[in-house]
Amino acid sequence: MIKAVSWNIAKRVKPWRELVRMAKVEDVDLAFLQEASRLPGDLAHLVEYEDAVFWDRQLYDRWPLVVKLSDRINVEHFRQTPPISDLGDNDIGVSGIGTIAAAKVIPVDSPKEAFVAVSMYGRWLKPQPSTKSGWIYADASAHRIVSDLSAFIGHEDPATHRILAAGDLNILYRYGDAGSAYWAGRYETVFTRMKALGLSFIGPQAPNGRQACPWPTELPDDSKNVPTYFPAGQTPAKASRQLDYAFASRGFHERVSVKAMNEVNEWGPSDHSRLIIEVETSAGSGAGFGATQKGRL
Image (cartoon, rainbow, N blue to C red; front, side):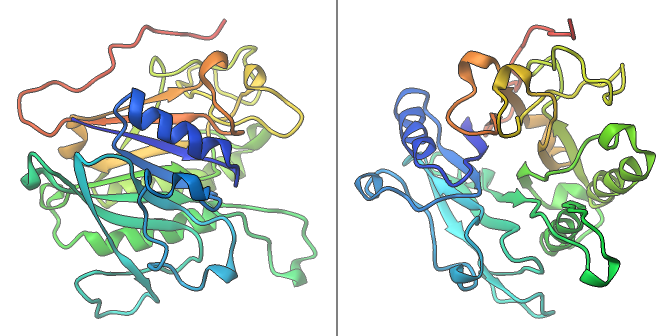
């Protein structure tokens, strides 16, 4: 089994130290990071990622990363290029700056179980100034991510690819801000396109995570969402919005489990909670956390 964590670390240093602890104590092999800061120098010998695969890092300061945390896996990073038609063997065309990092993850004990790992970040954007609008939105970045993921799909049958994509998309699942039908419709198109590519939504959804309490008025009564983010000035106890998600190739997804570490006492040193992802790498061993249902109170 490969154990991974997906986490928006909000350009903070403490999460890096927590990742090293998780690798040592909890056998975490892999990290999908978003809004990553520079790695503290004293941890450089314990954490491995590739910086040179990106466009000029001066263009942006909140890059996603795919990070190797153990010797149980090998990681081969894809170098980012503009989204041209003919790509090199180790290239991926990327249309949004600071939206994805991609790598091939190879289990040392079962190399035939390799898969493509993609860390996703739905970067906030602003409308063109002529609109005279104060909106910010991330669904446009999420759509660029979906488009770029399609480079790893060359056949109609989802069994021909093994992709695991996780991260902070900064959009809501099955509802809109303050109950807006307009935004619900925009957000839903991202999940619909993922499904059309053969990528199954794997959550996290309750019971694999604590649900919001008190229940927010904007959230549908039947929602299984689990909050993964709290805004500045609030605390994990009052977190109410899920912004972090995971997807996997249909079929492959049956061997992947995801859970939000969003209990107040386990949240961690970021405004986003961690997603813990387990990937079974040998046939016949069942995936799943066996979590207890935690409905709204």
